[in-house]
Length: 84
Figure 1 (cartoon, rainbow, N blue to C red):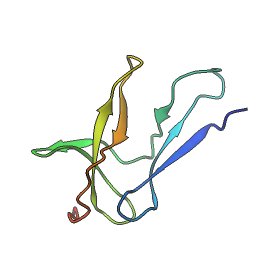
Figure 2 (figure 1 turned 180 degrees about the horizontal axis):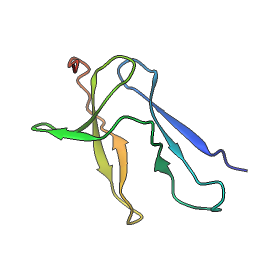
Figure 3 (figure 1 turned 135 degrees about the vertical axis):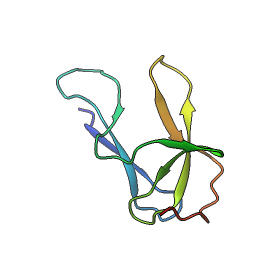
Figure 4 (figure 1 turned 180 degrees about the vertical axis):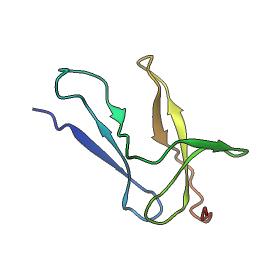
């Protein structure tokens, strides 16, 4: 049986950034970002999340595929920008 939670770590501090969950009642349903994960925001540099552990700006981008909105950590990270 496949787990119902998957964790994505912050590329800056290596602690949990956000998690995905799958509805256990729907076999094979899509993975969705948990409600307690940081919100996806955007600014002049693009989309990002604020890490709850280190407060760094973590760049994210939309992943292509399956027709549903999915996000992934961007390959290029600066890890030098702390958000208030």
